[in-house]
Length: 291
Image (cartoon, rainbow, N blue to C red; front, side, top):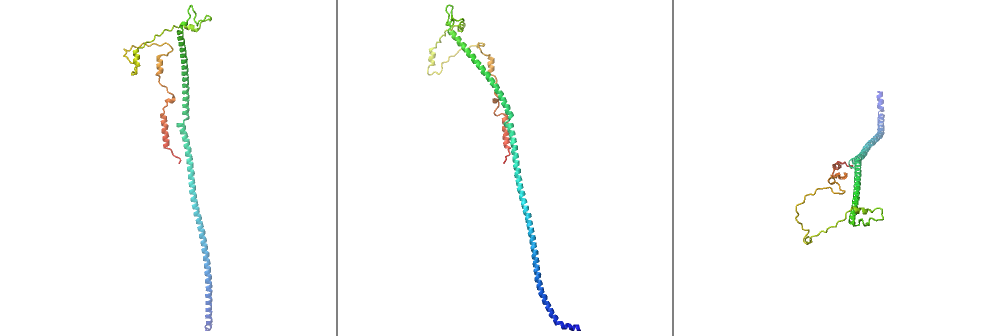
């Protein structure tokens, strides 16, 4: 009971102490609340800033990876384009080289064939040599014939002069002008005069005045023709005297077959030329352009 009495005696003080302590606790609670709020705001700020730093790092990493991917993709595209251009340039160069070799081979074989041209030129040179020899022989033959004809003409002229001047021949009583007594031997003309016969006098042909009158008539274009009798039988052929060749040989030379030269014998539109033209057209039609 004493304790109860002491408690009752201390009850007002306990009440004040309780109020005081509650007041202190409330004040301390506000301070701690403010401190907790400050601590929470600082911690949350640190956490948010750390999260933002993390996000910034992740964004930078993502951008770096994405930009690297885009750069590598663009670089691959550039490399692919450059490789394609280089490959096409290489293929074009190789195609040009192949076309150059092939065209050179084609031209050398079919258009400007060296061996065919060499063979053709050799044949031309041989043919020219043959023709030159034949022409030289022909010229020599013509020269010999001309000399022979000139000689014969001179001989005939000399014989004609000898027959014409036969009256200058020496006689037994009187010596001629070509047989001088002061010479040891007579002149060759004297010997020719002895071998020749005197020239006979030619009879003048008497023309009919009637024929001349008809021929000179203004309306006549040509002299009058008269009906002739039956033709005479052919005279027996005899070999004429003189330096004449055989008739058969002359006819054989006249009607011998033509022997044209290599250039004349080669046709302009030969099968080889047609084949070359056809091959040129085929090559032009199937030509692959560089562009």
